[in-house]
Amino acid sequence: MSISTVGAGPAVSAGPAPLAPPSPARRARKRSRGLLLTWGFAAPALVVYATFVLVPVGLAAVYSFFNWNGLGDLDRFIGIDNYARALADPVFLGAMRNNALIVVLSLLIQGPLAIGIALLLNRPIRGRTMIRTLIFVPYVLSEVVAGLAFKLLLPPDGPFDGMLTALGWVGEKPLWLADPDIAFWTLFAVITWKYLGFAIILMLAGLQGVPEELSEAASIDGASWWQIQRHITLPLLGPTIRIWAFLSIIGSLQLFDMVFILTGGGPLNSTETMATYMVEYGNGRSQIGYGSAVAVILFVVSLVVALLYQRFILRRDLAGAITKGG
Amino acid sequence: MTATLTPPPAAPSRSTAPKQPMVRKRRGRDVGTPIAYLIAIIICTITIAPVVYVILGGFRTTAQINRDPSGFPNPWVFDKYGAVFADPNFWTQFGNSAIVAVATTTGVIILGVMAAFVIARYEFVGRGFLFSLFVAGLLFPLTVAVLPLFTMLRTFGLLGNLFAVIGPQVAFALPTTIIILVPFLRAIPAELEEAATIDGASRIGFFWRILLPLSWPGLVTVGVLAFVASWNAYLLPLLLLGNPATATLPVGVQYFSTAYSQDTAGVLAFTSVAMIPALLFFTLAQRRIVGGLTGAVKG
Image (cartoon, rainbow over all chains, first blue to last red; front, side, top):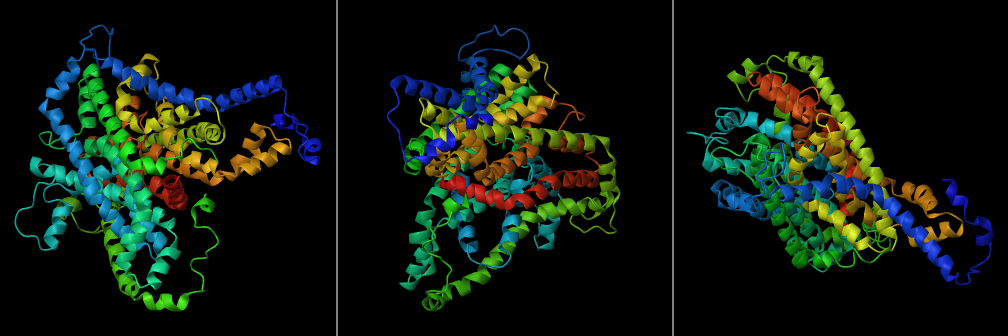
């Protein structure tokens, strides 16, 4: 870092601001040097990001217009046929419906659950750190490990059924992962197990930013615990909730690993998501063109949802965050 | 980071000042605390029961498991864990995971902090666009890019090479990293930079000698997140690395469970060993993660 000695260090700092406006030429030179430095800092990240994110996403868009198996020349242009085929396939439409259902269920069930638990745990109780660590465990485990664990827990007459028997469940137990009517709900339960901890920790983190004096003041004024949560804590937690909801929506739309491990999309496509469908066709059956069209649909859905969300819900949180420097 | 998050020091919230009325009004809390404990116990039981089952299962034999799926090890058997540690594939995959995770984390931190630095602190044409471009990365799921990545890397003959996973993982971790770091770097007062400039520091000098040391906690946060994400990554290694000898641990676990599907206890042992590094690492770094999330959310 020898460059830092270039400026005339001590001499300048001695006098208070002997700064005549620099000549335009010098200013321009300085500015272009600054610009060079700026882009020099940004360039490595930009290059890697472009190479491995932007270019492949662009290529996916190109491939989506071809009938291509990934080998040989990319010469069978078929226009929007891949898209038409996907949108006419009941299995793909079912996958989209599953994604949509997971989005809605996550928001309606995981959100309130996480907020409620976080509010209850946001008090000085003993073993708080330990509780937090344990709550976060599922989120830290890889999807593969978690998925395999549940696969081993949930077979007919498996450990989970054994536990239900021990708890007094009589009669038949559902085929958790093998019954098309039930597998989706099992999947959702496992997803909730996996990601609820993240939501709770996020909410707890947000609650740390809610000044305690407000609740205390309200409490002195005679507000009940519930009134305090409802009228003070929850509104102040708003930004956290909105960010969580955004992450949850995007995550639900792009769900892959857990489904792939746990059910592979089955039985009878009942747990298929857009992503598992795409990998099945693109990688499993080497229909790169068709898989890419599915990928583009997945991307467009995510984008539209995100833009709408940002436009209508996140706007006030983000206002000024991007354009105003500090 | 915490400096910008905790409420201003003007109000030392848990101080002694208004204690009397609070204690009286907190009767609701006295009822609430046992409930909080109860809920905490229920939640923690649900979250760790499957994990405990997997770990204990590794200490049983498959015959024991088949006889009584939900029982305890009786007697305790250590062979299965021994077999995992004696399996050369396990160590290869462990090594691959370690290399990929360390390289990914290093790459993400270096590239991320450099880009976040200029985005956070300098006005220049295209800054808003650059930031939006990285933020948009959140919307580019790996699944969208994975088929072209596969064909691209095959063209370059990189399939099966660990670089094939490291590059894309760095790239896909950049958006989150930059989003977390930008508010963080912005929070460092401009006066510090002015002072440094007056003392003759160049922009690089400021970055290197003042900004980096100050942003250390933020870097640790994004580093931990990148490391855990990389350690757990599945889709990319699955498609780009291929066979058990070049795979990372999650893919290896999956291979093992398919190849030895009859050996339930063995699968459980392999699975538990595979989750230990992430758990350990996370436990050590968990305060950082929570702190980092607070920053990201408030940013």
